[in-house]
Image (cartoon, rainbow, N blue to C red; front, top):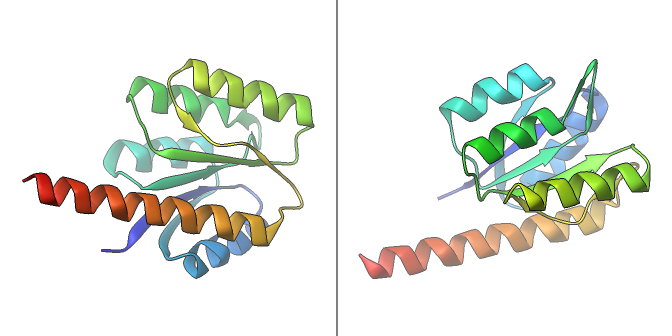
Length: 137
């Protein structure tokens, strides 16, 4: 079963690059470019991983974090943003306070090798969890 990744990114070039890296790491991808788009798809589908830009036009990716917290999501979240280090770090801490599974943030430009490695690890962890759940049935 292929793992699903939601890429939330408003810059088309970054969206395309992130989706390509995700495919290389073994994910099928869905891309959205706005807070509203993210909220709509998250209310209808589940994903094994989410990448989230913090600056989504006039709105903030923190709105998506709040929705995920309201949904009690445990999906791994990778914040990928051009925001300054302090903003990224505060957002990660806020996500953890909300009970979310937020990984250390990535700055832009993204270290593509590190992102690919992180996504592969998440995919492997997800696959292991699936196997354990299947064996418990």
